[in-house]
Image (tube, helix red, strand yellow):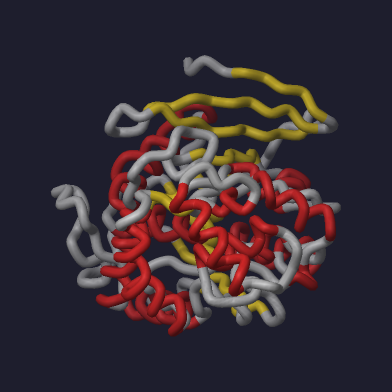
Length: 351
């Protein structure tokens, strides 16, 4: 049995469950349950994006996605994979996460719960890497996958493409990482120069991390959410929820956007070179979600993936385009519990 730490808080019990990735890296899962009732719908794993952590699913809103899932009877497991800012910064790739992290996390949940299957809610680079695992046949225990923003076909705005292809090589001369927290603290010359450039070009709000996030991940003002969808407390909270992300990851995204779909870069024999060149090796049903105002990955990303998966299995997968939502406000928005979470839970439960 894995060693665990129990933290009582409010009506929930939080249990931190360490697990070891396939390459020996120490990671963890956070199991959250109601202290008043046992879950009756089995485990669901939530997988965060790049340069954040599992707590990104618990923004300071009245009802977050964890609340909604627990209220619906699910056993919630938040995965901190190698991109989590709870761990030391490292030069990760999507390949490493797909091969080493997500399969080990799912096996750990199966061992801890004795469940036969796991459902998943995945976002951004947690979604791309988890989709890679599923398509490669590494997640046979996963039955339903709710994917937000991007999965198999990353499509970015034109300005993002310019930054990735033209500015990334220049930035790489100065640093191995970008870090939106540089808006609060700039410890190096590279951090100071990038912060100066961001401050000169981004005037959409007074939150320095919000502006750095937009420079790092997208093309908008802001890029990852619509300001009107966030309450003031969440807009302040994000200052502590973003950290380092390696340029090595962005280099992989350049190759993926150039190909039009996910490709591997490490040469691991367990992963295909091109993830859209064969029938997906998974029985999981996908529900693709995309904010129509997403300025990080265009909604076309999920439309293409839905079309691709449906080619192999018609009338099996689902697509939801969300008016007036962007990228992360799909989970952090003050009205997401009303507008979005019921749709996601419906997809988790739909036969």
